[in-house]
Amino acid sequence: MADDTLSGKVKQKLVETKQKWADEGRLLTGRHADPAERLPPGQREVKNWPVLDLGVQPDISTARWRLDVDGLVENPISWSWADFEAQAKTKITSDIHCVTAWSRFENHWEGVSTRQLLDLVRPKPEAKFVIQHSYDDYTTNVALEDFAGEDVLLACKWEGKPVAREHGGPVRLVLPRLYFWKSAKWLTRLEFVEIDKPGFWEVRGYHNHGDPWTEERYG
Ligand SMILES: Nc1nc2c(c(=O)[nH]1)N[C@H]1C(S)=C(S)[C@@H](COP(=O)(O)O)O[C@H]1N2
Ligand SMILES: [Mo]
Image (cartoon, rainbow, N blue to C red; front, top):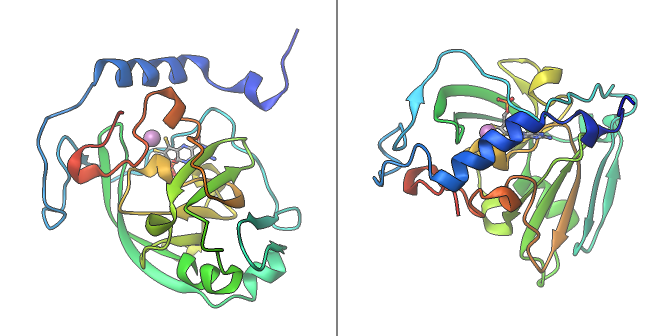
């Protein structure tokens, strides 16, 4: 019988392969690099932009799109597309580092900065982590201090155009200082919590933090 649930469509092979990489510590060079060295250890630069996901690319129209920000915040919000559009936008140029060893330099993003979002929702003192939830049921967890980085965006544009569906549009997170699995595509909810909750890849052998320059690939 056909399984039409999101989890039923997930590319099991891909998930198993990536889990095996984690088990075997594939790609590890044992080198650390300074972020001033633009290419992190074990990475190679690509000029194209690979698409990586679980095999499900939700088709979310801006009419249907919502973003909820909840959990340990003083001012929870639930944005429609019009609410998102009404926010001031920030432009950031940053590099992408995927744990599967490709890096893509010089991406021009536009969106709402997490700094601005944090000013609005005001995390409670007990909030320590932010769990990103996506329309494909993907989740990934980041420490509040990483989420609050000055270069972190809820991105709606890339190279001046709306972020394409396959890259996570209408809105995806971009957190350039960590491996790209820490940047959720098709973002729909940000949950502020005190106790960390490892996400999809984190429970499958991937590092909880994910710093490319210290090769926090697996853990
Ligand atoms: N919702 C969602 N976000 C996701 C993923 C996913 O499967 N679903 N994959 C992650 C991984 S492993 C990577 S490398 C990047 C890939 O983003 P890209 O397809 O735009 O290159 O998205 C991350 N965010
Ligand atoms: Mo990835």
